[in-house]
Image (cartoon, rainbow, N blue to C red; front, side, top):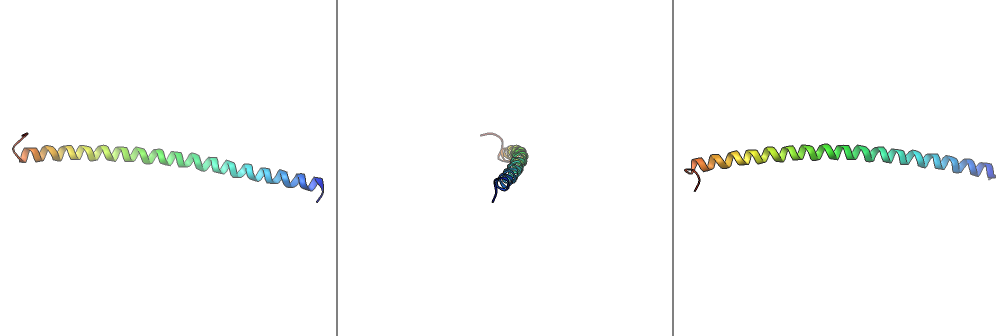
Length: 68
């Protein structure tokens, strides 16, 4: 293998590694966005469940004759 062939091989190898790294960065960004959306939806769901629990607690208190 000549020096020119080795250099060409190294350049192609570096370009390939750069492309892979860029894909990895893109996937990381997509994962962060998806995680952010998941956390937001989970927070909304927990808030809704807490409100439902509060309503049921009031209903049970009312059925039992109020606060004791």
